[in-house]
Image (tube, rainbow, N blue to C red; front, side):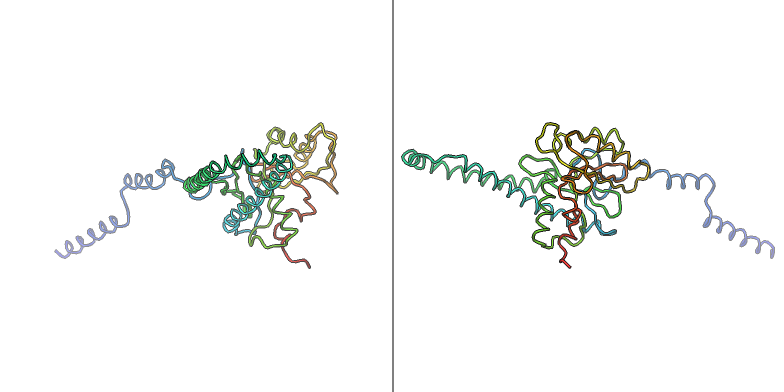
Length: 306
């Protein structure tokens, strides 16, 4: 009896331990399989910005490492404000030219026009204001109509703001040019986290063939073959998170794509072709007065002079 009393508790204890600590072989395998192999088949929606990709235009922005989120939010505000200023300046210039071209109407004809069109003008003005308000409300409600939004560069210290192409809105080059010249002249503080801002008019994969093909529209626009004013130019090349590409090969390829009578001048270029490679994406833009405007470093341009 004594041996039976001792044997029963030990057997129960052993079974209890096994049930608590271990699973049968087959159950353990399926349980492990469900834990580790079910995840890849489940579609997981990525949170945050979409990744940087070919075919976009916008703004290449550098910032202090670890401040990418703050710089991205700040960049949207700064770029939006500068775009509005640039657009207003271009409209004012166009209005001045139009006024100079329009001749003054004779007094009698002018008086008739004023009496006939006064009512229609007020009605059209009211309608145009209503349309503008309606369009603005619709645009605010539709995220797909936003002009600027962030893309994930996937690189430390780099922010990219994509700009949608839209009629009547200045491009990245004009916006950044106005931003830098305004900062240099006023020394007004614009940002806390942004360092450099460069326009991007072309984005492609980083192969030599893709870069040469993507650059053709820019070359035709800024360096036409038939011109009375040949330009001196330089090529700025920087690469991040990509060490598998020949730097000089890309620089020479870009330089050779610019036709005569334009010439390379590294010391005093009129225009600088910017080539920024971020991982597998090549970003290309053209800037003026690169050295004079502190290499487009917004913080340096707005800092107090020593």
